Amino acid sequence: MENNTNLTVNSEELKVAFEGESAKKTPKMATNDKVKRPLTNKKLMTFLVIGLIALVGGGVMLTVGLLKLTASGPTTDYPELSSDEKEEKYYSALTGEKLTDKALVTAPTYCIQTPNGTDGARPQAGLTDAGVIFEAIAEAGITRFAAIYQNPTSAVIGPIRSLRIYYLEWDTPFDCTIVHAGGSGDALAAVASGGYKDLTENYTYMYRGTFGGRRWNNLFTTSSLLRQYSSDSGNASSEINGFARMTPEESEKARVDGTVNEKLIITKPAKGDTSAMTPVATAVGLRFGGLPNYNVDYTYDANSNKYLRFYQSGAAHEVYGCPAEDLGEKNPEDVCSLTQMAPSVVVAMLVSEHRASDNYHEDIKATGSGKAFIFQNGMAITGTWSKPSRADQIKFTDEDGNEIKLAPGQTILSAVPDYGSVDF
Image 1: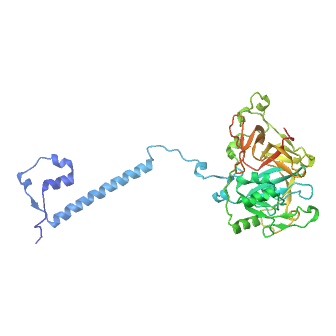
Image 2 (image 1 turned 135 degrees about the vertical axis):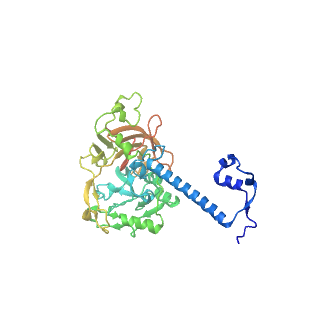
Image 3 (image 1 turned 90 degrees about the vertical axis):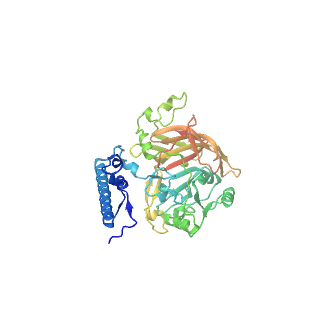
């Protein structure tokens, strides 16, 4: 016998439960509809099966509807992302160029003091690998470089010489390891007290080549030795405070290619200066006011969008470009081939400068402000450089105070004494 003693249901309520509000509106058919009838297990199972079928049917209809919506596409049209928008881009804070890996953005940087004398320093090795190069007189009218590297690959880098305080002031914003062989007293004191990453003449990470014609300009390092130093010292990253840069795409739009086009002028011309309306500059001369062996000329090459560097004598400034592999502690003459220096950007900064009290070394004011000439994309831009403190990066502005962005690529910044000249 079926057990139905406690399970009863009102047929009116059951009808509403399964048929919705329409059941409430259906006329009652007989008086015995009001009678509560027992609900057997068989009947309960029947109602449950019917309910399950209804639920499954509804799910099928919903699924079919979604499939139709997917097939026909969304009702709102969203534009497809371009390949550039889908690709995450990384740019070097040192050069402004694109990088292939996010990890390269914060790779350690190295500021290497590199001589430029005619006493065996030339040709330098690996200098084309540097992203930024500062050029200034070090002593007796002889120029020297502070070459800044990030992710170097050169098998030989150098020679390495002593540090001056003004090179240190230019180096500081790049958060680099200062690579040098001794230096002036004030520069060494600043490094010791300033918490710098310091690598001075050290034969674990540097080596002496054979003397030959290089004489005392024979201290070198390699990319692998620099990476080993960063690993050993725990200085595995750098937070670069770089120059304001255009993206490669912005720079390409600004190219002149040897023709005048006012629409492509990056900054407004100086007031009343009609020559600024034709900013094309294909030849540049920097005169440091001292020995002609250290004056330089540049010729703009529209095909490569770079500036070929020459000495005033007309000889190309050639350096050793070394293979991208570890060749051991070798002389650059033995393992490298010559290539001409050709930066993408040349900057001339007029600086306050005079001979130091020893009448040999140079005093250069690296902070403050002064006139600047920026040569990039075939154009000459006249502006102002400013650097409030050692920790601040140099900023370039036009006469209205608008910041001038540098084109991406290797950049050479020359500190031209206020008694020197910039010709273009």
